[in-house]
Length: 310
Image (cartoon, rainbow, N blue to C red; front, side, top):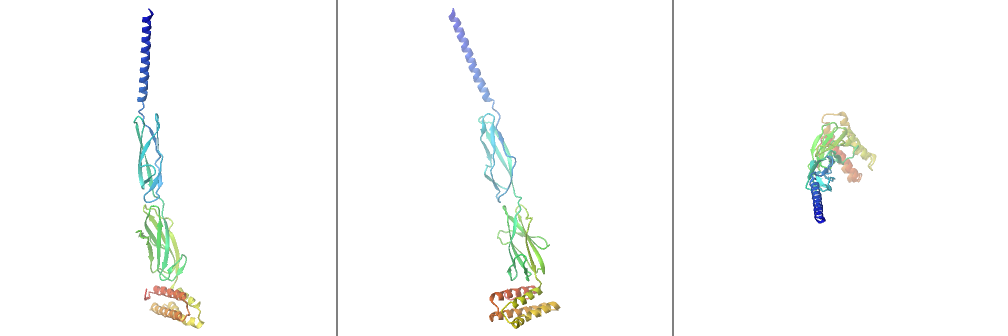
């Protein structure tokens, strides 16, 4: 009587257990199939960097991808972090994949720019026969030559030169390092030379390199010759005799007669002969002779005299 009842009860327990197991498996399977949401990628706001060279800049960035189920997941970006980015706007594309194959993508743009102006420099300054001249110095020469340069991370495109209030003159940078600005027949007085550089992205040096100097009048140059002779180890008569051509030249300059420059040229040649003669007589040392000769030749250039051997 009890045996059939036990069989029925056992059957009910088995059915209930099987139903619970089936429900559990079904619920687990449903839960795993619900993950259809891709990861979330966090990228930088579009960053801007200054170029460190003509080939741009090496950029390091951080990108993170998180998933609601898997947590932190791998993310790959192109171009890679720590790559060199060229000047311009470069788009970085990032992708992330979770364990269920849900893919996400995001991007940002890296801007590499050049807005830094170059620096300009005057490397050398030389005048006529004298050679090197320093800023604020004076000279009788009316010729001058400047060697200029510039520095810039991206590179110099060209230079510009200006004398006093004149126009800026363009000088293309050919890469040879021989960037020179030359001026001839400069007037008497104080002058200002300026040089500036422009880089390959058009940035202009707003603080040009500056050089000031003075061109002396011919009369003052001749007076300086007489003063220099006066310092030599000679008697007063020897000094006076040597300076006679200079006194005559000064008189001609004062009178401003027709053909005066031609006669002054003769006078300077005569004085030059005196200098050579005094050197041979050991009345002048080599340094004194060279200083007087250079000054005479610069005056002859100013007057338009023909100089042999130049």
